[in-house]
Length: 427
Length: 180
Image (cartoon, rainbow over all chains, first blue to last red; front, side):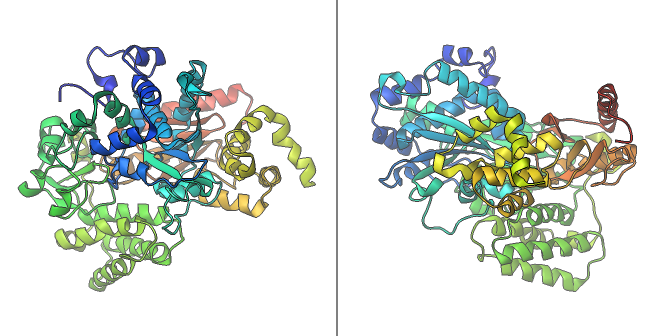
């Protein structure tokens, strides 16, 4: 790609677009102005629908369709999900830090489409410093009358507030996030009703991921057809792929959806540290099944529809790569510990199941596991599958079940993470 | 100590901040302010005191138990005092693939504590925490103290040693005694 569309701050010679004046000089907020002064809310929704934009937080739900589901009641709310907490995911943080106004503009266009007069940006509590800066940036928008009452002389008024979480992965689930803003425990709601009908304070609400919203100004400015020309048929647009683990150059990479893992890992990120063999990849953080680094997997296009064909999910495109030194049972023990810690406790299969999987994984990983433990591990995973209110339960078994199936040998020996002194030096 | 007496502490000191927090939410949904107020209270003492929970409960018309349940649920909020500075190291999978566990061990060894423990002078608590969205810059940790939360990325144990010295010196400059 010649031009960065989401990580615009990386374009050569670009000014610091985290400064409002620089962002304005580069045409910032013209999309918002166009939407508010020249388009009806319905036209904005239709355009976003036509663009094929799908949610970048992991679920991949069509964004315009989500907006069109809003019940005909007021007030309505829009909420940005900046609770980025999936292991392996760090894209929203870069957007918020380096290209904040494109995100805010997207949130503002979304609010106009939803006819909401209050928008909340839910930032994970650890982004405390970042939220302070965002608050100042919103104050600047108020000063310039890009926020506030009767924006551009129209009837549309909008306020944006930031709401800090306090350390809970589950609040990335949209209904748990809404509970959290309401001052309650971050536990998912039983659905339906969906947030579009009964969301924040039981009012119609749109919740969108930070990166999703950063795409919206592009669509308004350049049109749906242009947007659809990026990527592939059912997975359109630019995507920030997060690459972590044993890559030579871990980091965020912006590319059109549809590039292959091989292109990302080898062409863009320089391959594997120490030029070791790539053993396995986790395409969507800790949540989706682990894939062996076969040619078939490496040549799979990174799209919402191609990943299920090889047995995993695109999710938020947060790719964790592991070289030949990694014991997959050690990796699965790590993800299991994470989900055990982050289970909100509402559903028994997840609360108890992740606890037991964690104990079993620790035992197996410490070389003290018995053969019966493997059978028990499978059974506990089966007891979680399909029995929880939200996807966290499902996520918690992904690495374990796929690890057992594809890397069974690793579940018989001791720990290993590639960080022997010798391995670390080569990194 | 009566709740009414306690209630004056945060409100007196942070009246305008509390007013600004409450203004972000609909008047009939004051409960939404519980987390921002808890963050505020925690910066005051390094943890959320019982008195602060009572005060926040009173301010928002909810029970102290409801406030305490929020503190218990969210990992960034503490009901018990810890070190003045919390060094919170991410040891999740992506960071661990880049040496976070070994880094955490070295940091602990240098401070003479185990994970979860506080140094004898009460200054530093070292903890392993879940993913902090900085996987490409491992090893990393966040430093949590009275001034807020800051990220420290691409760290070595030596970097931490230098930071610890710096914070100790700054603390001594403010007259915090070693035995405090």
